[in-house]
Image (cartoon, rainbow, N blue to C red; front, side):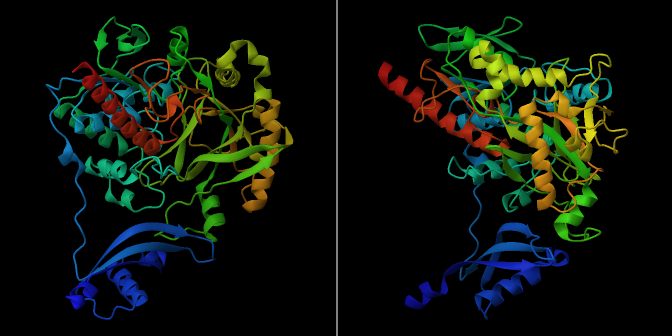
Length: 534
């Protein structure tokens, strides 16, 4: 009996492989067994737990964490779709406003828990949404309900599909990632240290999630812009859409995203408490990807088996954080405006990250002193500050989505650029003093930080990089407060703020996990109410 239990072993070990060895399974197995000092390997199974790139030395390597099973087989991975049940005739339902990751993952969780979700989104499905993205790219026409921020899948669908999160204590990251895999994402996202799907592949995954929700009895309504709440004695009973349609349910989840300003105004009008919250604002900086590769990998030409390299930069300037945000290796800069008369930019990458450009938001923390001129707007001071910068970036004489830009070196010198480097930004750039369009408290900190970053990354500070205005939607300047235990708004029974727009997430996976957590909270709320009435 003792020998039997000794034969069963599970161990983890980290190995290193050169880029051209990274897909060699037999070599990986051999190195793992050697490091474990397991000579008899006939009864050993190995699987990868985590894979990352280490470029700190002159020769970049892949660090691979593997789990080795001796004397037993690798356990089968759970299939979360098997836990779903038909909720077509469920007695209880929940409205979800917003079909982004928070909304869709809340819907999947509700179905698993036996509650029928009714998802309403102001925008269009992912396929129809492409037409409006084309209109803003090619003609500068902004549809306020269907754009890079609004529509099925939310802001992340056509904005890179990065899945990295630090929110490991906030929920089941594995379940969120595995559900994406079960809906068509590559299984690599389960092991990559910085998983990424890509804006060309994520729409199909999102569409598959939609079909799952409908298959199990959930409802999804597009072009359904919520304009009012049905409230009775501090309890939300449902919502009304722009066309006058009324939806009623036992609970309502608000998962509208960081740019749904009208929802914040509606909440305020209805006397539902909202709060201001910290956010950041700045620019998007675009370099040649080959330059970033040469800096990060110490190679003139990137090795074939290495992905486009990324970076993460942060420093303090005059007691404020300045940091890179949403870095897109091999990516594109895209127009993310949600209303006519403003310029907002964001970054995205396709799955192969094979663009010749690299871009990253570079932003400065906004502090109360910046908001003094907007104090009359009360809780909306940050939102109005954000809006004012976006409108300053818009060239009214041109009327298109051309974005203001400077060469990186000219930005630090406060100089108009005579010409601009090539760009991935399809609407085009026009040479402007971006440093003058930004608030002084932001621009001077960016100038200082850029030079610091140039010392941290030799070659970063170059005239071949564009500074493009403006990166302003890093997060919402408004928070919808909720109880830490119930996840429900303390002033409105049955209202559950959720995701980025409510101030509780910062990316696809953290939003998805928040959706799952809120769905569980809705179930507890409904169970409690059911017990009270019976």
